[in-house]
Amino acid sequence: MGAAQPGAGEAALSGSDAEAMAGFGSAVGESFFARSADVVAPDLLGCVLVAGGPDGSVALRIVEVEAYGGQGADPASHAYRGPTKRNQSMFGPPGSAYVYLSYGVHHCLNLVCAEAGQGEAVLIRGGDVVAGEALVAARRPGASGPGLAIGPGRLSAALGIDLSWDGLALGQPIAGGRFLAVLRGRVPPTDAVRCGPRVGISRATDRPWRFWTEAAAKC
Image 1 (cartoon, rainbow, N blue to C red):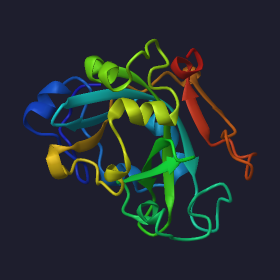
Image 2 (image 1 turned 90 degrees about the horizontal axis):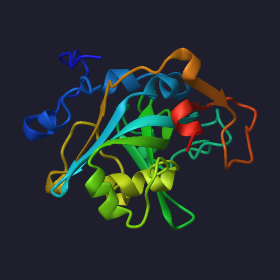
Image 3 (image 1 turned 180 degrees about the vertical axis):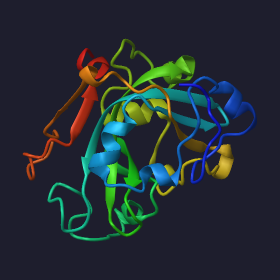
Image 4 (image 1 turned 60 degrees about the vertical axis):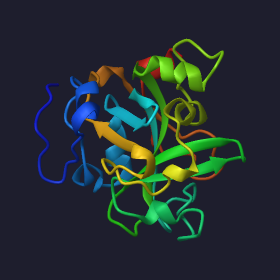
């Protein structure tokens, strides 16, 4: 897909960030995410997730995601019982980040969907590194191969994501010049997309809200 100009509700990269990511398409914004999480999730496959800061930028082509519903709607969701101090960002505006720490070890990046206050989000489970390989190698010493950013914890480590990114709006720089963006990338062929039950949960296990591509399956 060519790098078309962003339309209404879309974010835009600027300066060196835009130059570095040329060829990955325009940046999507709030309107893209202002839909149910289970609708947004498969549309994120093939998009390029970019995280940048003073030490450089890393771009990953998204290959695996999971959708989580909102308050009272999805027993497997952090939002099911309503807002708390931990999940407050999940109830934020569409197109913002919800980052949490899993088992006190791994940071997990989610992108908020639907209207503010609904508590829906998509967990980014896996990506294929397409830019910033040297920076990823520095962040994950000793790791290599196609599974470098497969798994929520590995993906966040590759991007340099921690709890300080929680609540960040896509396309809006924060302290230190850090930014997060989703570019339109390339839509995968329909026959390369798979869906099935979400993993690592004990409730609502029958919902086929995990989506992935063949690239993720091979890792």
